[in-house]
Amino acid sequence: MKRLIATAALATLVATPAFAQSYQYNPHEGPYIGAGFGQAKTGADLDLGDELRSEGFTVISTNTDDADVGFKVFAGYQFNPNFAIEASYLNFGDFESNAQTVVGDIPASIQGDISVEGFGFALVGKLPIQNGFSVYGKLGLIAWDADIDVRTDTLIGNISASDGEDGIDPFYGIGAEYVINQLILRAEIERYDLSEGGDDFEIDLISASIGYRF
Image (cartoon, rainbow, N blue to C red; front, side, top):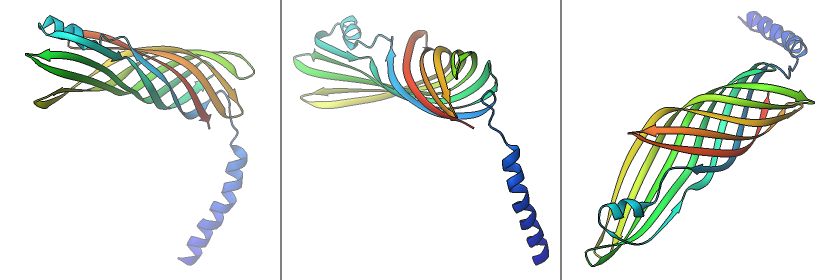
């Protein structure tokens, strides 16, 4: 048994340098990973005042925040200089809306918060320019999940409610990429066309990413 273990160990030690020498980095083929962050902005109508007015409430003031910091992590495989596939996890942050109204003679404050995240899969088409620089476009699908929280604060008490939505919808984007050695630098803009229950809204993500190609 000891001789068998020693023989296996010796074979491994001999094979390791040979394997290391046989592997050569190919800038046009292979797996890669990366992460990025930027600004996520939604085109959804978040104004709570419109909904309250339609229900007959008196609206004193409203405020919306339709942008937040978004981030993503991604992994892909480059098949050739012009084609890759890519999977990603995305978090678009929180979008908020606030309204001041009156319920009877009692002032009330309403806060709404929507957070969206998802997993994406895309086909990536690239056009190499020169010296590691290229431009690309991507087309894919995102399986997304949205959490909706609403809180009403009044002088006589507080009420909160939560809901959720999910779906699978398309997204697309364009960007520029620069590869130096095995380091990937990206700048891109993506649009996610989300739809649920007859309501359509978009989320645009403008981001910068850094990655590593194996």
